[in-house]
Image 1 (spheres, one colour):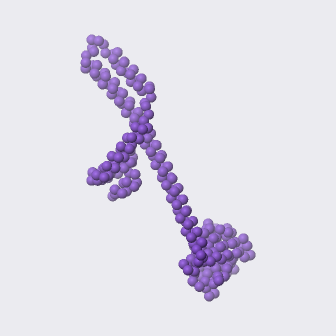
Image 2 (spheres, rainbow, N blue to C red):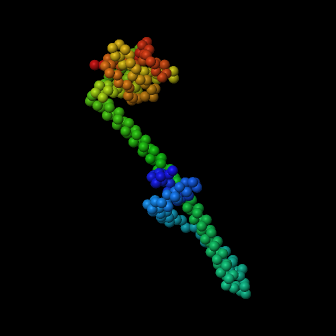
Image 3 (cartoon, helix red, strand yellow):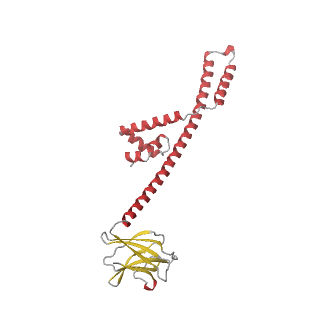
Length: 258
């Protein structure tokens, strides 16, 4: 069941005024309008705003519309002979002429209204796209702020894991915070692997290698699992998705913690 909040937040009243909703939606909105004076006042404001918008953007009908209608009136007058020009015929001709005028005017106004509706739709689409861009920027800013706060924390100790002969170009920067029990790594300089393998990180605790997590192929900054009492950090190449124990012969880098 549609609520008043949903109606206002999703712009359904505006769509209702523009006739863009289906019969079921119209029925629900009309029931809400009957029972909610505030909602009805909001509807009247929207209708008034659309009316003002239409007037402000009104375009005069082409001159050909006016000249064509006047010509029809003159023809109608000429067809009434003097002896047949009784009042009823005269007024019928005038009424028919005005009816034609208002009909053409209504058709033209309807066309202009559709143009305004299309302009409003385009503006709405643009606003929606801008909002999505803004949400994306805000999300990215929040993400960067979170990483900056973690990396700049005075309790975070930096350790650099350099690659061995298996991966001489590898370089991983790790930030270990024993106070809040976190490990963050910058894996941007890990060489690319084939589709069948992943890098995996391990903590050495009393000679036992404990899994700290798989490093995604597209990772730059990421949080790994903090392991208490770790003596060193180690990175191996494992089958895709990781392994339950390290492949020691495929160890590419390690660093001892102070």
